[in-house]
View 1 (cartoon, helix red, strand yellow):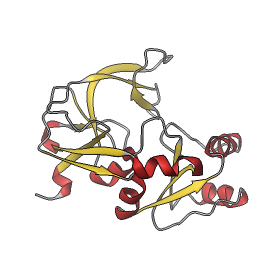
View 2 (tube, rainbow, N blue to C red):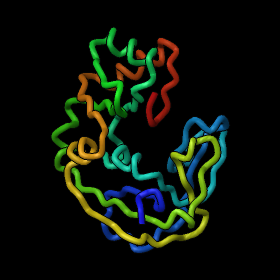
View 3 (tube, rainbow, N blue to C red):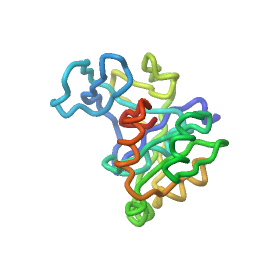
View 4 (cartoon, rainbow, N blue to C red):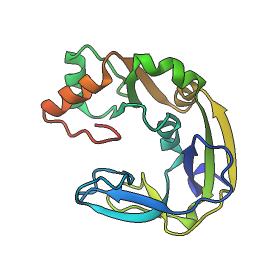
Length: 185
């Protein structure tokens, strides 16, 4: 079977045999989502198992609390803004900006990629088929445990861009009117 017949979930845990739906939160406009902390204002909550197509698995290989920004190579106005800040990115790939100080921990980070039958999931509305969800418990059909998020990103076509001050860069992009959510620009 091809990669397109599966969806993937990346976890720091390598011992999950069955995924149970857990509470996720979605903003009213659908632009932001994530595991619910119970402190979100507005939006909606729903119990789901979350997965994504294979090409997005590298993004999720980083520890959840690692600040980052994703920039597609076709976002010309964002690329120009970043160039003005001294950050040069590629136009032929997905670019992942992370703080340079996080690189050593990303190189030693272990994570497991779980594959699921795509038929057990459905696309989450408004996400361009990037986010897939199941409303029932699901078992993975396979898993692979790896170490080194930086290598995994590069091997799967992502351009990793270490920067100094990722949070300041994201703040500057927002100040310039670019839409930046928890997963990118």
